[in-house]
Image (cartoon, rainbow, N blue to C red; front, side):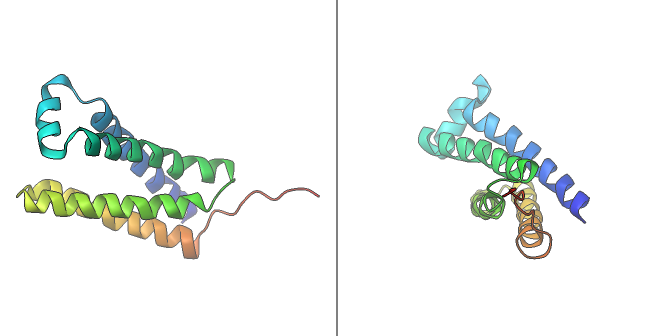
Length: 127
């Protein structure tokens, strides 16, 4: 189960790295549309939050320090994906709403498993 959770974390990190990058550094042909739909500030906020989430999904578990950041990162991603699902639903973008809803379910699963059943424990310090 631990390997499966790591695979999900890496896939989530890849997804949010891609999407965060697009939000912060969009292709020139999308900038105007993205800014009209979200505004510049919100677009940057979402992009930077998603890029930071990539770090929170991988580094605490890999280094086994500040492991409490992983569940917090996942909680933040729940807010982002739930908001994105509502946003896409209200705009009639069904496929995007379904995609973000599926991400939300995966994030809930990983969060529950890492918080309650298979937490990554901090590295033991030698005294």
